[in-house]
Length: 301
Image: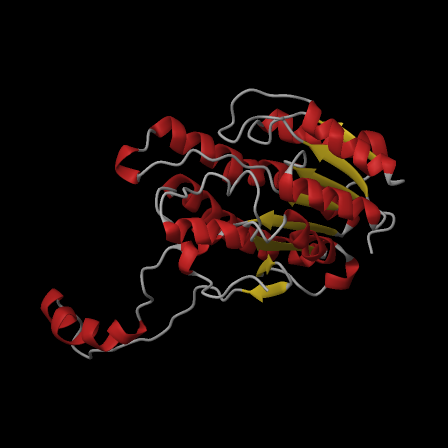
């Protein structure tokens, strides 16, 4: 499905990113494997994870090169795209998957932990996407696949930085889709459900949490790769601005924010009439406050 195309996959040294890179190569794409080899919180760095993904692709008969630049650095993002151009002569697909976690309850969250997560997830997605945009426009084609999260779509405890970044990615993707539609450029999001480094920090201090982790462990990163390959392919040429999910053998499409209900008062509103009339009329349409772990109430199938 991707024969002749060149893809950049960020954070492709492990987990979902690696699974996507390997499957894209299996479907004919030449792949730039971007990875810093850092720990889950962004510390350290190693070339080993990225090199392992490249070797796995080559062992299967595919073509890939590694790139060690940071998505959060403007010059680094440019070099990521230049790696594709220098080695393969073009760029057709950008998968924004790189991410870190620095979880903390909101009232304890430091600015450093807030900024680090926003920089990698949201700013990194912008920078790499922006670096490819001119090339996409010139060739009148291109596909972006961004990773969002249930934390961004529904919220979660102890992840204000991550949730804000992942919600921002949905807005970024939608605006890219609108701005670049005239150039036949598409942008979509995937909310992946998989057990890996990004979910291994979920606590297991209660029987309920242990049961949740046991369910998550059944959903492997590889289950998300087919959706990413499809969205990057010409078979998805008419699909843009959407948010999809994949979990085990399930596929989801998420609704997006729309007006659910409206009320009107001919004389205008006061705080008191909102309390007496407006809010009672709207209350049945208020979505419940639930964490992302409650977003899907059935076991993976």
